[in-house]
Image 1 (tube, rainbow, N blue to C red):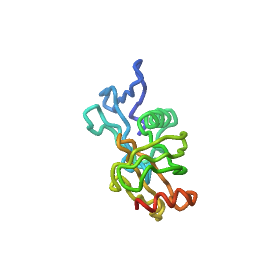
Image 2: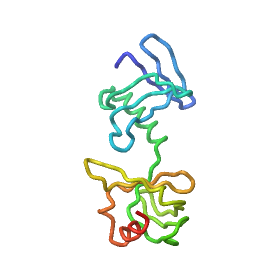
Image 3: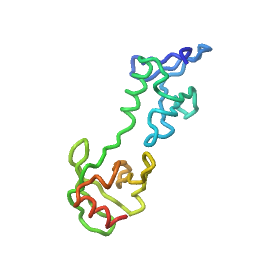
Image 4: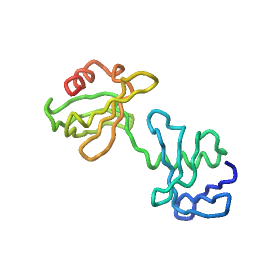
Length: 158
């Protein structure tokens, strides 16, 4: 793996140099399992989505390369985690939700109950992924750990 080199150019883009010396500018890291195994199965792809380098585990990379990939992933992956649901406008959809997230308070619009997807973490299926009307994804890692009011609001939509 050390044969690959990863740097940033003066525009802040990731640049990958392969063992054969081919240079690809503006590469992007993509997780295969972003929620269930975020540090396993990553690909660096070119601007056309072609895989250039497959990484089985992020931990196997040299620290400077790992840092560059983690920074790029943090820029790309924005998924606030819902900590509490404070209010819902109606139990019919579309519905506006006032929520507390790990990034502060916000309001989201749930278009349909189909925009709530169940997730499985560590053999437990208590996680939820909620897409708002603008396509932003909100995560609830374990709905059983939410306060009683939040669980009540959720139960009306599940």
